[in-house]
Image 1 (tube, helix red, strand yellow):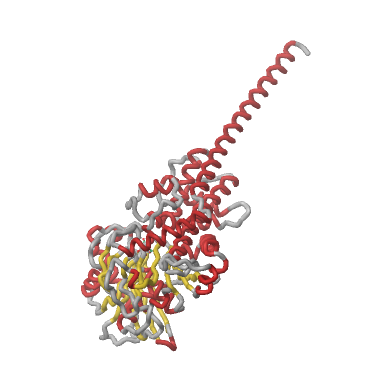
Image 2: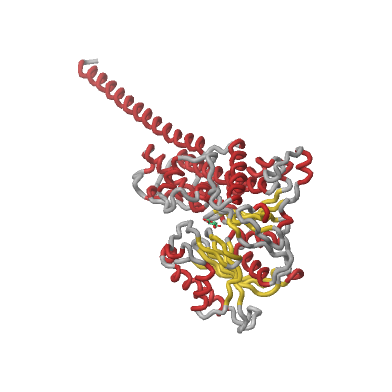
Length: 514
Ligand code: BGC
């Protein structure tokens, strides 16, 4: 080999070494980045841990806070609001009743025909309408005028099919899914807005009065017979279908629960008397808080940037309005570590762009290549060509956030069962210690109805929740507890309650409370 040939060979060797070194260094760098992304996931998993021990602490905290909220006004973050519903529908209701269900981005108008014990619900018609975005932050008059005109159109369209004489006054059950200080079963003052609504002049006003005025202005002879929270409507339908129903939980855009309480346990309202000895209490559990809740930096940022910081902490960890945004925040953090996501300042930085139904779709993508995940990342976030291993990581994030939400909601449900002595432990109310055998033999069939898209449409969420309830209660007790999905409960239930309020029977609610 001549000198030139030797020089070339050395040159090539040096160049190959340099290329190899660059490749190795790139690989090392990308492995480091990947490790950092995996670190983000690990940290999330740790932060969202819902071990059985922690869930039990949440159960206890829920039961204790329920006591505190019942003991005094402002005694707990759980408001434990009186509803004045002491007369749950029992099947004897007869006639045609209307309902209005206002609580989220849509509202519904219903007509329900009740045939009494024999025929039960003969039929019901529902009409859904979106609430125009601008009305969610406008004035109370604008909102109720709009709603009243929709109700009027619904009534006008019914023609002669309503079974009602045209000159007869119609009875309306109204569901209003925001915290209210009830003055009676048919009136209540709005305490605050949640779920993105913000009509300032409405806070402190009587919701039924606003609606009644708007209906009258629209020339409709309709009486607001009842005003209830959506959870109370759901409980009414649940109890109508199955008398063992003791509580109702809403897990949709927002979250809440109500249950039947003994009036003598509502200490903040001394001397409260009802025919049945019981009353439905609207817990407003979205505002529940406990140091045992597994909270991450993503939750804190979401809360701080929300229109209602330090408020509705439980709802922000478990409900449909927020889960998508928690996942978005985690992906954004990962995108800051790994450059495969492209320009991170893009759509991924937009709050609430990733809605919870999309999380469900990604989570439940069973295709080997996760095509649905690719599609959603592309269509919603404008992120293309994400490697499969990153798509798998995103599915894992959806899983962690959803599992935590479902398990915490499960702990909340068991907290209620504990408070009313249906968890097999003898209840915190009794204060007496019972032997396990004695407690178990006394457990009665207990039904909790659950309404809301997060539970009814998101299978993985439902499975995690059901599984966690059984895990906390233990197999033997869990056999006595039935979790039942209901649909349109808040609307149909409001019509049932309007019927029950118009013709009260002796139906008692308190026999559900041990
Ligand atoms: C409201 C509750 C309601 C729940 C479910 C929450 O944001 O405060 O009153 O029941 O959402 O709709």
